[in-house]
Structure formats: C-alpha cells, structure tokens
Image: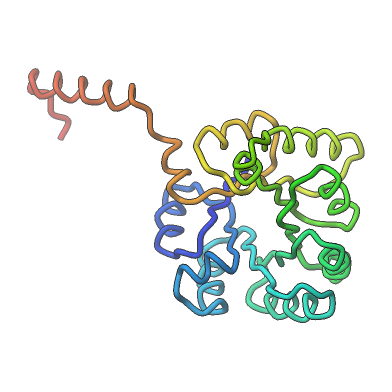
Length: 217
C-alpha cells in the first residue's frame, strides 16, 4: 500500500520523506489555509520535493470553472493530481481532465455508488473518507471493502485512496482490505512505529548494555 501524507506542511513532508515513507501528498483548501502560504507557492515546493502524485484541489463547484482551475493547477508541475469533488459537475470535469491526460483525484466519496461513478468517469484516484463515516457510527472500512470488491469485479484501474484517516489502526485495516493508497496526517504515520512493548524492550536492552559496559564505538 502506498503512503500519501495529508498535509501542506513542507517541513513535515521533508521529515517523513527522509525516512522513505512518502509516495505522494494530498492537500486541500483547509490544509493550505492552515499552512498560511500561497497555494501555488507551497504546492510547487511540495511537487519539487516529492516524485509521486501531489493532489491540489479546485475550489469551484461548476464544471467550466473547475476545468479552468484544474488546468491552472496542473501547470504547477507534471506530478499534480487535480482534486475535484464527487458531484455531477465534478464527475464531468473528471472525465474531461482525464481525457486531456491529467491525473484526477475525486474526493469526498461516502458511498460505493459514488465510487463506481468516479471509476466510470476515469478517475485516477477515488478518495473515500473513512474517519468522517466513523464519526457517524458508520464503519468506514466497510466502504473501502465494498469499493475494492466492485473495482476488482470489473477491472477498474481507479486507485482506492483511503482518506480521512484518524489512527494507525485505520492504516493497517486499509492495508488488509487492499486499499491502493492511504493518506494520513504526519502524526498518524509516525504513530505506526510506536508500541509500548517496543519501548519497554528497548529500555531493558539499554539498561543491560549499560550494566555490562557494552560499547560498540
């Protein structure tokens, strides 16, 4: 499973990229606003840092303006994935932008029917929002599983990009189901390395090494 980091914080991306854990980046208007930077400036910096897809989202809701914005965003770098909402206008924009050779990430997916439409529209990525469904006491992982079944049934090439990831457990569950990609905040990705028994074992090893006077260099 590919790891995308869900942030517009360049320093956080640098840190994870140095560990070899970043296959791509997803941003949205809220994350760009949180960074306090110009959308074109920060997106270009991220694209220069990361070889994989970098999702940049349109803010328009009508077809014509989505196309204009999407094409403008795509000028930033060749690894831009244009992010459009899962609406009828968004699906139409997805079809057009895909036919022009752009990567398209269809976002705000909350049902298998929506995911099916996105695949038929030629989306490169579909972004089902796991955490927001969980907030409504609906199992977000069931949606990932349903989409995986549908896409496999018909050989759709659209990649399942699990989004709204809230925990390290979400990451492992997505991997078990077979999501192609999971995008998560930096803190969630780093939390995947943590385990109380790892900490306990390391502390014991270090104590014993010190007591025995063990030195490597």
